[in-house]
Length: 224
Image (cartoon, rainbow, N blue to C red; front, side):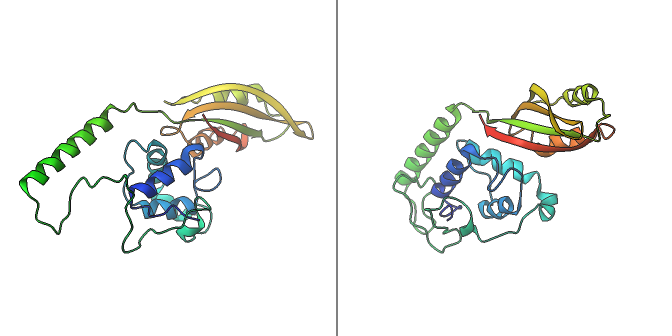
C-alpha cells in the first residue's frame, strides 16, 4: 500500500485520485491517518488536483488539535491504494515520462536559449492552469440527531437544527425514526461544500442546542 512518492507530481496525482470519492484517508472523520499523510505531503497540492487540495486545506485546519485526533499514526505504506508502494523520502525517485522540469537543473550552467525556453514553458503552464474551471467539491451527508428522551419536542429540535446557517450548507429532507422506548431520532439530510463545511462544524453547532440534543452521528456520507 502507499501513494508512491508524495513529494512528486505522480504521488500527488495518486492521492488526488484516491480522495475523489473520500473525505478522509480512513473512515468518515479526521484521524491520525490523515495527519501522517498530511505531514508527508508537506506543501499544498496544485490547484488542478482539487480533491487533494480540498483534503489538504481541511486537515490543515486541525493543526492545533492533531495530537487529539483518533487512531494511531502508522507508516505511510499502511495507507492508500493496495497495489502502490510507498517511496516517499527515498533518496532518488524516477520521474514519470510526462513530468515537466519547469525549473531546470541546479547543477548545470544554463544557457540563454535554455533559460528562454524554460521561461516560455513556465508561462504556458501557468496560463493553462489559470484557465481551468474551479470545481466545487460537494458531499451529501445524512445525520442522526438524538434527543434526551421521549418528552423532547422533536419539532422544536428540528427547527433548531435547520436554524443553523453557513456558507456552503443546504438542508434537505428529514424524518423521525423510532429508536425504542417511545424515543425517536431526527434523521436529516444536508449538502455541503467540502472546503467550507465539515462534520466537525455541524456537530459543534447542533450539539450546542443542549436542551434538545443529546448527540449527533453521521449516518451516511457520499461525495456528489
